[in-house]
Length: 333
Ligand code: PMV
Image 1 (tube, rainbow, N blue to C red):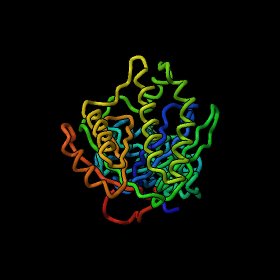
Image 2 (cartoon, helix red, strand yellow):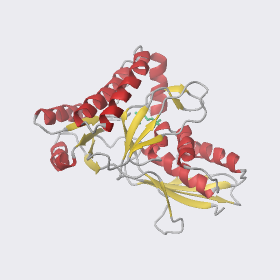
Image 3 (spheres, rainbow, N blue to C red):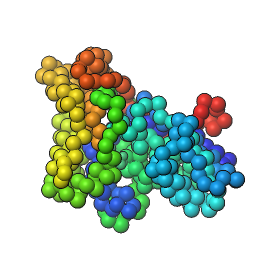
C-alpha cells in the first residue's frame, strides 16, 4: 500500500430528489433519486495514513477544518481503517473551487473524493460501487458523485446496510447545459440531514412525498431514457417543488428560498413562455439550477445574471465521476 492518495470529484444535482431517510443510523434514503454529475466545480482531497499522528488532521483550504466536518471525515476514515485493518491516523487536505455549504452540493463532491482517496490510500481493493456505498454513509448524495453522467441511488429499507448508487447514462447521453444562479453569499441555515429529520418528524406531507417520489422518479428516468426534454422538465420541476412543499409544511416550516430564488424561478417560466427549453431545480439552499439545451445557455446565463439579487452565475455540463490523481503532483491539496 502506498499510504497516500489524491482524488477529485464534482457535485451532482438531483433531478429526482432524495429527501428523507429509511434508516437514519445507516444513512439510507427513503426515496430513489436520479442526478447529473457536473464537469465544473470540484473538490480535491488527499489522504495520507502516517505513523506519528495521534489523531486525524483535517485541513480545509489549508486551515484546520471545522470540528463538525472533521468529525464526519474521521467517521469515514474509521470505516476504512476497520475494513483495511489499519491502525494509523491520517492527514487529510481538502479544497473546493466553489462556494461551500449553500446548496451547491459540496458534501456530494467532498465525500465522493474522500471515499475514493481514503480507500486507495489504505490499499483497499474496492470497485466504484464499494466507493459509492462508503460515500453514501457520510452523505447519500455523495454516492452519486462517484459516477459520471447520470446516476441513480435507489431507496432502501430500515436495516439496509449496503446501498451504492448505480451509473445510468454517460455524460453525452443528451445535450444539456447547467446554469447556476447564485442568489446569496450566505451559508445555508439548516443542513440537509437536520432538514430531512425535521420534515420526516413534523410535516403532514412527508408520507405523501415518500409515496409520490418513486412515481416521479420513474417519469424522470423514462423521460431521460427517451431524451424527451419537455417530459424531463415537467417531472424534474415536480420533484423539486414537491420536496420543497413537504419541507415548507414542516412545523416550523423550512424555507430554503429567498426573494431572488423566487425571481429566478419566475424567470425560468418566462423563458419557457418565450420558447427557450429550460427548467429549474433547487436543493436545500437558495440557489437555482437551470437546465437547458446548450445552444440556449449563453442567453440564459446573461438573462439571469441581470436579475436583481443574483450575485453570480456558474456554468457546467454533465461530467465525469470521481477519479484518482497523481498524489505527487504539487498543486495542493
Ligand atoms: O446527501 P445530502 O445529505 O447532501 O442530501 C442531499 C439532499 C438534496 O440535495 C436536497 C437532494 C439530493 O438528492 O441531492
